[in-house]
Amino acid sequence: MARPPFSRDEAKQRLRKAVEAVESRSCAEVVISVRPWSTSWAGIDAAVGAGLAYLVLLYMLFAEQIFGLLWIALIVPVGFGVGAFTSRSLPGLRMALAGARRARAAAEQGARARFVELGVMGTRERSGVLVYVSLTERQCVVVADVGVLARVPEGEWSKAVASVEGSVASHGVGEPGLSALCQAVEALGDVLEGPMPRGEDDVNELEDVA
Image 1: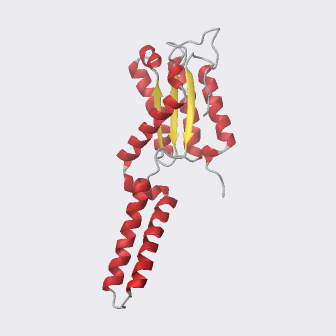
Image 2: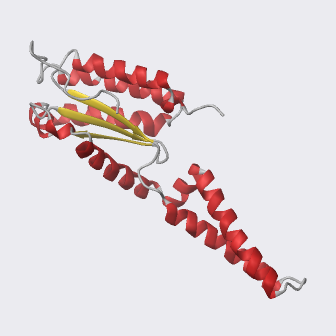
Image 3: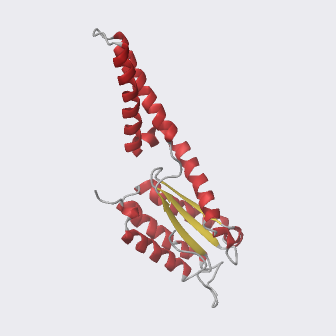
């Protein structure tokens, strides 16, 4: 089975080049983090399993065929397992049941946690920018440190962030989404270069793709 585009080594190289393009023009420290999911969504799996088990139970209770208690005790749990497994195997179904708002909230929470975990807030000039991609939720979240928010005009930064986040929202997590994300990240250099120029003593403080 082919690996998803974002999980391939080639994708990491392309994302790293996009980051290098930004950091060659500015003192910003950009990190791209691609995660398979932001939360387990086990509750939705359990809900789907319970729903299927309930339907199986109703059928066995009211069907013309008479089922013994032993059969009910055996088949109803099987229905739960099939439902939970189906939900776990179909991320699209999970996200449809979760809803866009919950998916976005999970990605935002995951991005904030990753921002701290990777030390993006600990750069010399507080110039860190995290571009967080969560594949199951099909979400991209940009988190910038205070140094970036203080130096880049709010309107320009908001527009640039919307472009980066929209690359995944509009094109998904396949090849089109990967290409769009690389282009949008590289374009951050246009916004960051003026207010945050690269200094002669600038060093790469963070891993570009983590």
